[in-house]
Length: 199
Image (tube, rainbow, N blue to C red; front, side, top):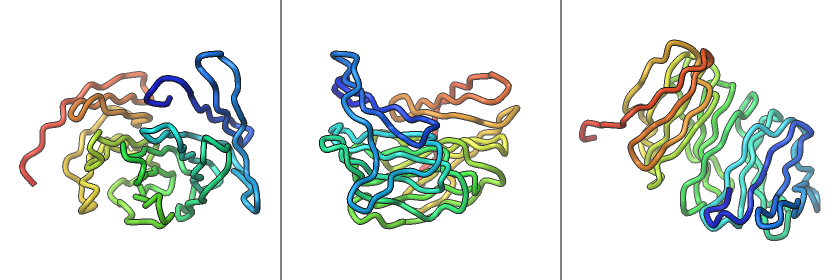
C-alpha cells in the first residue's frame, strides 16, 4: 500500500500485478512489460512500494525482480542475480535501495538507480522466505526455512543477531525500528524486540 493510503499493488500467480485505487475500489492498471521489457514469466511472489508511491518493485518465481513506474504502468528495470525463486522484497524509505530474499538461500541488496547488485548476504542454510527493512534502511531481518530469523547490517553485510524458531519462519515485518513480528509454519507468531550491542 502507498504511504498516503490511496493505492495498493497486488501480486498474482498469473505473472501480473495490478494497481488499485482505494478511493474507488477499482483497478487503475495492470503492470506488464513494454518496449522490449517482457514483464514477469512466473508467479509474482511479492511487491513493495516506494515511500512516495511512484515506484514498485516486484519479486517472482522467474528468479528476477522488476522495477515499475506506477504513474505510467511501465517496467523500468529488471534485477537479475538470484539462481532460484525470489520470495520477497523490501524497499528503503527513500526508494533507492531494495533487498530481496530467495530460495537460493541468499538475500541481495540492490541499487535501484543503476539496477546493480550491491552485495549478497549469505548465512542461511535453507530457503529465505521473506525480508523486511528498518525505517532507516540500515538493517534487514530475514525469515528462512532453516527455522531462523536473522538481523543484518546492510552496510557491512554481517549478521547482527539470530533468533531460532520452532519451525520454518515464513514471513517477517518490522513495526517501527525495533519491534519484529514473524510467523512460522506451525502457525505461531513471534513478537521480538530488537536490542543490539554497539557495532
